[in-house]
Amino acid sequence: MKKQISFALIILLTSIACANKEKVTVISDPAVTLDEYIAEGYVQGVIQLNDKDEKPCDALIEVKGMGIVEVGDIAKEFKQDGLPVWVKVIPQRRMSRCTGTTPAELSDIKKRES
Image (cartoon, rainbow, N blue to C red; front, side, top):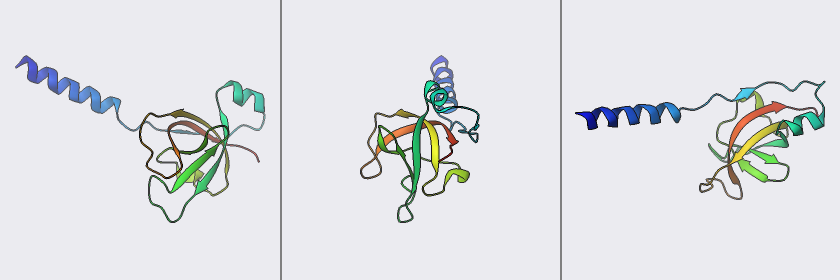
């Protein structure tokens, strides 16, 4: 009985921990300088849309210093080809699902001025 309860608890905690976390989608503040964004851990990126591919390869981000990264879902307001953004990405140790990309987790994204 204890094993069943422990197993159920582990499954519950794992499913809660793996739930899709909501991405913060705040438009960047023009008063914040380039150096402040970099100090906060953001890097410059540009959204690349691919009409031929389906998810997760339909929207990729070209990140300065990392190349093109696949991040999974991007909020609709950011799905604009060529949109300049500030992103915080965490490289992932998994196989890439899109050709020529680096898998990463998107922890934050903000629109930036060109």
